[in-house]
Image 1 (spheres, rainbow, N blue to C red):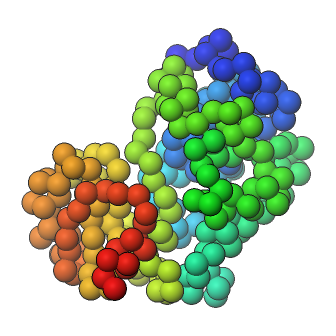
Image 2: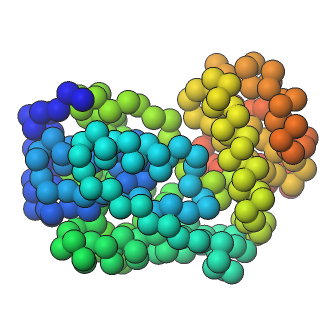
Image 3: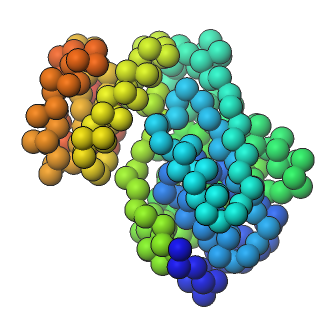
Length: 262
């Protein structure tokens, strides 16, 4: 990977240096990968930890492990069982807030052992009202270097290109594919994961969501992938999905589909 400290914005450099040693909350998504790459390029003392749960999108933990191997950074996978929590399993509207608490507490415990600061990939475009878990970051004192340095998604993507980090489609945890109030089960999560894995294996690129709704499922893909996705309907139904429709991806999550059905 093409790394140089000069590629890192000055404000971000100062923030990372101020909080070092660092423990990066490495989800395996774009933002946390770039944050780790920036810390590594600056030759700061850094480790990474990935919380692995039933909600993790297939491939993300593996991606996190791979980049740590490439950088020679110590990687700490932490397994938790979110579905053991009855409240989270019931999928309330504040599920994201509750999950974020569960995810961050073991990271803070590890950071205490390592005498490090937990840092995550939240940036200036992650508005608090759009991310219920944002409040948890503030309550627990989690550092968000991109936000602190005034860097948004465009800046992260530019930095990714400079550091040689591939651009990765935005994602969210598997629980976001299930409407609030609908119980989250391992079976539902496995079905969603299997469907998204099948679509990726068949070459579907860009943003992808397989959402479970009242009368079946909606597969959201980029406009240029809709015809390819339509051709895979039979394979999706073979997995156990029913009444599958294909739609263009749009922000708003699965609740947007619930509203259109009312």
